[in-house]
Length: 439
Image (cartoon, rainbow, N blue to C red):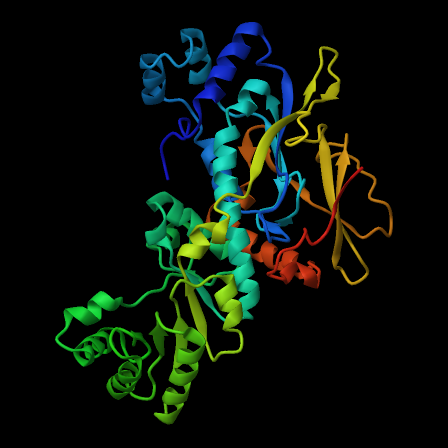
């Protein structure tokens, strides 16, 4: 995607900069942190997603002539501040958890060190990206874990807006989904795409048999035939008659799925189509997928639930100023003191404590030792450092960008999930799988 991302923000980000430029505090070196105070109800871990997209958005966060003229016409900031915005480029440093990493309440997922004005402008774009993408990835990871190795495809583009659809496909892929129906996601992020036909294709033809024959002529017998437009049992019989016993798959999009799937598998086997796979769709979420674990399902397609975070459409992340330099150049901690929305101030580093079986047991957050610092990871403690440099001097690490960065995030997610204790995979309500401890 090209073009400026500078107005993908809230007005108060610019008005804060305007006021800070007036009183001289805009250039104080500051440290902002993105974190989640808690996980959505019933979740025991989260999955970081959106980092690669965010780094590209930050690079495009520039006020060009069109943006400046709109701000001028609407008198959002003073003319002097418009001059400052015209020269805006993020030139600071960003550290954070790798994309695909799992996280817990209080995990310092992203730290942005720059002047106050440089860093505060990024609040909205940071949160809008990480909150949506991480919500999708966290829900998708739960679905993948209960699919028990069966392929699972994202097909929710029609249940969200056109830009979110591409982001959701990417986040689900990072979380372990195997393919998407969204072609732009395939083009932009090199994600495998899938899809054959909807009920409309069957209804277009004079008969279900005519529709099946047309599809097989176009795509071969390895295609997937949708068999529930009229009568499922009749549809399966027609599908095998038309495509033969080498039919690739049938798709079921309605009915009492455990019962229907068992019946279809029995019918396919009786017809000699023992290698024909069964894929199911029909408003699936992690709970219905778990309920099908004992059924002869070969693959799943998930739409609404994955692109809406399966009931948690935002990950609940916040972006807070946690430290700034004083006039003597020393870092001082700052934090909101509200009891209901308190945050922990200070520069932070983070590591995950693993036991002798490399199972995660504790999230450790070191206060006062900023990312890249000298936190004392004592010998034999089995601590895995979590924070990596993402942007240095305004330049993003290319390893986290583009299709290659997406593939790397997907691989890292698979590794990180291997460390989670078994209780992390329970779908019932419960606390975070491991505690977060501040030192």
